[in-house]
Length: 157
Figure 1 (cartoon, rainbow, N blue to C red):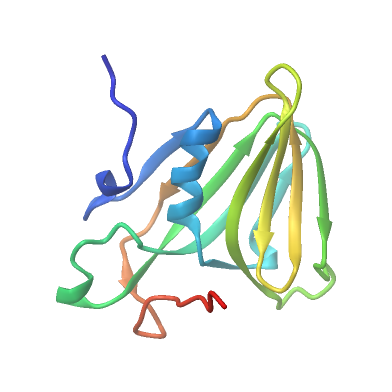
Figure 2: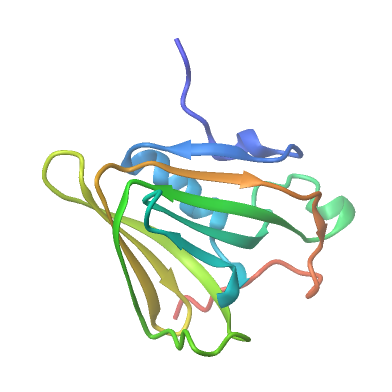
């Protein structure tokens, strides 16, 4: 029997995780929270029905943060089975724009289809209508020290 991945499983190793249901996606969303990426690092491959982002992901799962400081890592977020992509609050003509991912939300539809929403800071978002939920998150570089030197913080008020 295979156990589901847990948040702590990432530890000091590169991540390579997949999500095929809403519970899996919550783990990926938590790991991708506060990732930043230039707008130029989004790819919609309509013929392959794939949408991909190259993220600079904060390593929330890193248990060694007290020892070596806050780290980021480049990761690829890939969404398969994409039928349609729409965005809001993003100026796609501004090739210098840096976006910040707050969460990945799943809205289940009939059968296996539904919509993924990539919620961005600043009231922006990307909506992906999918035939079936299939998302992967894979680290593709070694971790590097976060430029800010600290973990992202959120004002909860």
